[in-house]
Image: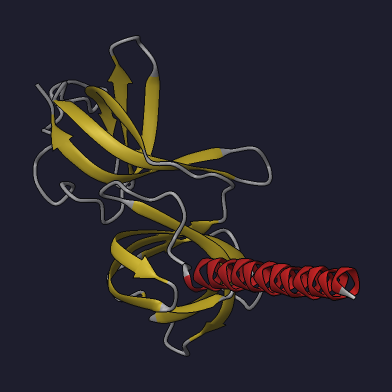
Length: 212
């Protein structure tokens, strides 16, 4: 009789421990699932322009719509649609800004998802994969109405389009002192490059400043 009672008690104890083990396992799995969902939600909400930490930043996306007066566009970047004010921007695209056209937008300030109120749009260009801001220092070798050329210390010549870049409204390029229209003024140019379908390259200055 005692043996039967002991066996029954052992069996009950085993059943209780098994049930507790299942509950603990279920609780642990549920916690993991909730944590994964939270991580995914955070990733979807974060829609800031990728890889931009410098003074000039670049956002690439597709044109969704353009205002009738061409003073504003909406572009799609991932899941975000951002409205951009072009009042102070130079539009230098080889295609019309129609729906579906891909563009790279150079700006200062901050764009976060659909919020561009703290951004100043500077340039709208043909979309470039992995566009970066570049710098070059040299002496002014030539000037024209719409372009200027510098010669770098290694003898390379770089030509730039004259646009609304910072510094170009001053005399930073100097005045020509010979027949080549070169002033020999030493400048540092911060710029971006666009390679077009035909293979030609244009350099667009963002800032031109005197260099020592």
